Length: 449
Ligand SMILES: [Zn+2]
Image 1 (cartoon, rainbow, N blue to C red):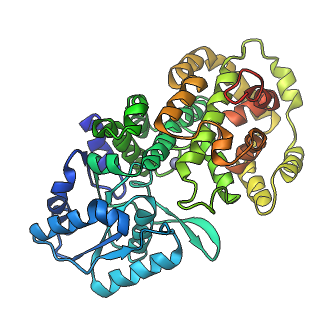
Image 2 (cartoon, helix red, strand yellow):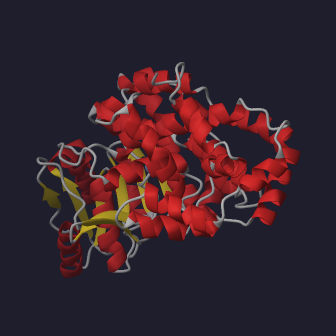
Image 3 (cartoon, rainbow, N blue to C red):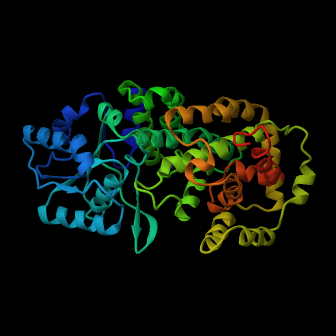
C-alpha cells in the first residue's frame, strides 16, 4: 500500500474507519482481523452477500471467522441475478435481521451490498465492516449510502465502515467491467484535483493537505497499468484498490467529498438523474458515467490551460459579468424540473458580485504562472487518458454509455449549475470563456471529433 505514515495519519483522523487491509491473500486473515476489530466485544457477525460475492469471498470469510472463534448469525445471501438493488426495502430487511440477532454486519461485496449494510448499521448506530470483492468504485471507505426510496434516488447519511478488507486476488477475479468502472472513478481524481487547485488558489476552498496526499499521492501510479488490470493481473490491482480506498478515507478526513470529486462527477450525477442505463442488468455503473465526465472535464481543463491569461482584459470581463437575476434566468432555461430550484440555490452560494469578481480575477492573474505550471503537472492529456481508459475496458466515447456527443455538450452548463462546488467551469464563466471553451472541447481535433 502507499506510504504507511500517510495512511496511519489518515486512519487517526478518519471519523469511522480504523483498520484497512489491502493486499494479496488478506482474505485468509479476515477472521482474525474482524475478530480483533469489529467483533472484539464478542457480538456475533452477520455476513451479508449476494450469491456471486458469497462464492467469491463470503464462504471463505465465514470459514475464517469460525476458525477465529467468532460467533456467527445465519448469513444473508441475496440472489445473484437479477443484480441486487440498493433499495431501502433491502436495507430494512438487513437492519431487522441485525436487530433480531444482535449481530454486527459484515458486508461481503461491492457497491450495493456495502451501501445496504452501511445504512442498515448506521440506522442502528452500530459499526460494521466490509470485505470488498471488486475494485468498482471508491465508496467502500466513504460515508453515506446512495439508496432508492419511494422511487427517488438519494444519498442517505451514515458512517463509513470500521474495518475494510480488500484482497487483490479477489478483486482481480471479479467480472472485468467492475475494475474498469473503478478505473473510471479513480481517473476522476485527476481533473477533480485540478478543480480543487483553482478553488484553493482563488481562496474559495483551501486544499486539505492530508486529504490531498491520500488521494493524489499514488493516483498516477495506480492508473499506470490499465492493460494489466484488464488482463486480471493481481499485482496491478494494488494501486487501484488502495487508490479507491484512500479516496474514501480522504473524504472522511476532510469531512466532505471535495477530495474525491469535481465537476466530472456532476456529469455522472445528472445522467443518473436521467436514469441513463438504469434498464440494463447490471445497470450502467457509476464509474462508466464518471469516465465520460472525466474525459469531458480533462478536455475542458486542457483548453483552458492553452489560453493566455496574461492578455486578459479584466475590465471587460468584469463589465460582462451578469447580475444574479440574469444568471437565475439562465438557470431556468438550462435546467429542468426540480433541478431548477436546486441549481438556483447551489449557484447562488458561489455567486459573487462584480467587485468581488474583480478581486478574484486579479488574484488569478497574479498567481497564474505558478498555478498554471502546477495544473500542468496535475493534469494528463485528454487523448492519453482516453487511450488508458480504453485499455482498462472503460468507456471512451459518449456512445459507449448510450449518449450522443451533443448530450455531453449540453451537460456542461448543467454541471456548472448543479452544485455550489467551485470548479474550472466557474472560473471559465467568470472570465467570460465558458461557452467558447465548451465549443472548443467539441471542435475538430478534440477527443470525440
Ligand atoms: Zn465516484
